Amino acid sequence: MPRKSYTIEQIISKLREAEVFLSQGQAVGDICRSFNISEQTYYRWRKEYGGIRTDQVRRLKELEKENARLKKLVADLSLDNSILRETVRGN
Image 1 (cartoon, helix red, strand yellow):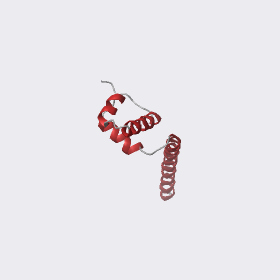
Image 2 (image 1 turned 120 degrees about the horizontal axis):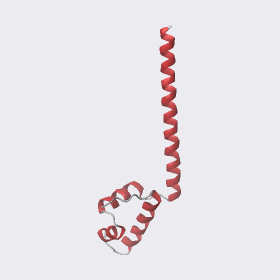
Image 3 (image 1 turned 90 degrees about the vertical axis):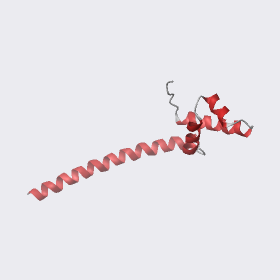
Image 4 (image 1 turned 135 degrees about the horizontal axis):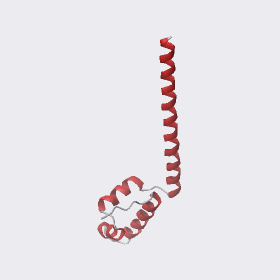
């Protein structure tokens, strides 16, 4: 069975739907079957994304991108710094 990839927004909406169904008394297994996911996936999603709103997810994505960019900059500057130190020591 091919694996379907869900966006974070889709995951959050499915978790919200699941909360509604759970409050109506449905079992987790039935909810997971209706979403075509395993119970393990549901619990992993709930652990990772439970209680997060979609605007917070967008902000989190932006921060992760910025963090990756800054880490790359630090790595480049550290490399430049070490090259300059070696050049100074050599002379």
